[in-house]
Image (cartoon, rainbow, N blue to C red; front, side):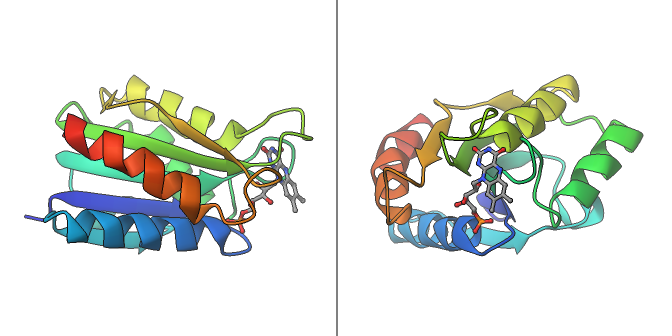
Length: 146
Ligand SMILES: Cc1cc2nc3c(=O)[nH]c(=O)nc-3n(C[C@H](O)[C@H](O)[C@H](O)COP(=O)(O)O)c2cc1C
């Protein structure tokens, strides 16, 4: 079984690149990973560790490629009590709902019984021209909690 399933939600590609960079870092540390961009629910294992990386669009909304998964989870309410997950958001602090999408997604996972591991990382893309950089720093700590 894959150690960590990365799930990305992205419109313009930044969150996707961050997810791929995190997967690389985790692989370098000996974890096996699978990275899925906007997956369907039936592609996901209902156990183990997920790492959700998503930007925010609209007014605090999920990117279009992650919305279908959100809707499926919300409709089916699967038992995710055997899932633990990490949470990384990308956003821009000038919007009212900074990193709203990752917070919304996290709440849904919690409602289905999944528990977050470690602190949520919120990357402000106005402060970090290269969002992979703060993500690489964060994952060093996050991986020690696994
Ligand atoms: C139309 C639009 C709406 C956005 N709305 C929000 C928002 O509500 N909250 C936020 O934190 N960031 C918001 N952002 C900033 C994006 O999350 C940020 O630019 C991110 O890097 C985009 O990542 P992506 O390339 O993975 O889509 C918005 C960006 C755009 C273009």
